[in-house]
Length: 456
Ligand code: ASP
Ligand code: MG
Image (cartoon, rainbow, N blue to C red; front, side, top):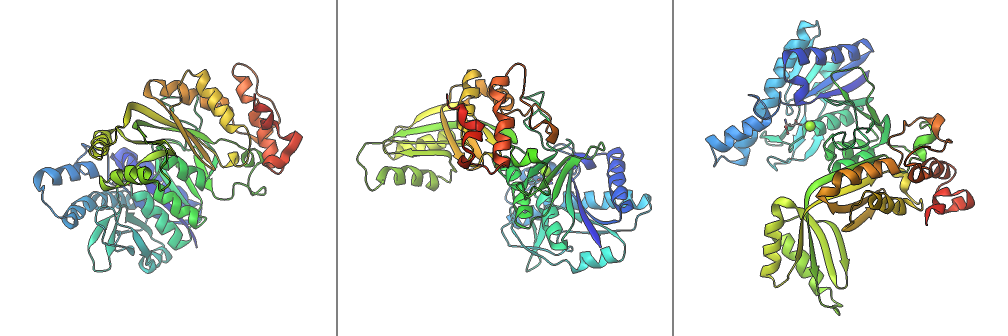
């Protein structure tokens, strides 16, 4: 049995006309021989009558002292309504359909209401319907505890439902349908020439989701990554192939050469962060100050990011809305943080940057060319992030996008060609670095490691 999970977001389900388009996608899958499980979000966005935001606002206004358990009952209704409405649309198209809530579909969670974790999926009932030839519509975003209480999985959690069911059924692919045609190389609002990625790694997408790109719930990607489950992010409203997400970036049998050497897949950004820098006295072998600073923030339940610790300085960022609280908490412990508000974090993400010299050099040059002061940086083996003043966000993202050649179409045929034209100085390294990695990667590339020539 070829199973597929098709998840549709709130905008895809908002109107009867759009639900017709959803039906076409489901019918197409059936036509290709798949048994689809259709996972739905609540219909529409804030303000629409049955959207999650609307239900949560109703709850906050009408019964402000409701228990987390009761709030989850209310929140879960959006997907229930959506599932039944879509099922009717599908039936009108001649499909035989079963509707299951998360609990009925066997999604068992812990009792952490409003952000429950999926413990397991008991898929017997799902499987029985599929075997009987039914399309199964499952409410996203919710499950049930061992004792039968309805829980929700956190905002955006329908993606997680889709991934969990995909894993449980060993689906061929999980399709995440949305209102954009895939994962972009950058936010098109900042970078008009941003392209849709054809192919990327789960790990890249997980990093992007973690640093601000809101295309998919990070937990869903991580789940799919752990189980090597392919995903495709695509539009409900056209027939474009979208972005395929798989795990083995380095597998030359599955990837065109371009991808195995693609240094950077995308540039992402997170606006509205505030930088705090705490100067601490020298000579602190026990890290007393580092411990005190970060424990203060922990006690205030504030999560920190972009952390740099040196003997005399503790620098980090916090979301803008908690910056005041963070500052006051530190002052109450006798520290005098330097506060820079109105910052944005820009991040380049790419599996291909591992072990490739010259990536940081290019980042700094791009940001300098964009006139963006670099307040702080941080990196992982597949990301480099820089903190810049918000006023420089657009130019910074555009410069990084251009410097890493992301405005160029990603076809294998292009890999040997040097980039030409304006901005080529920064771009010329990209094809070269690709072949360097494809040819064995890292510093072992020696003279054929063109990115190493970058260090001017
Ligand atoms: N409806 C839920 C939310 O808005 C879950 C989802 O859409 O994924 O967060
Ligand atoms: Mg979503």
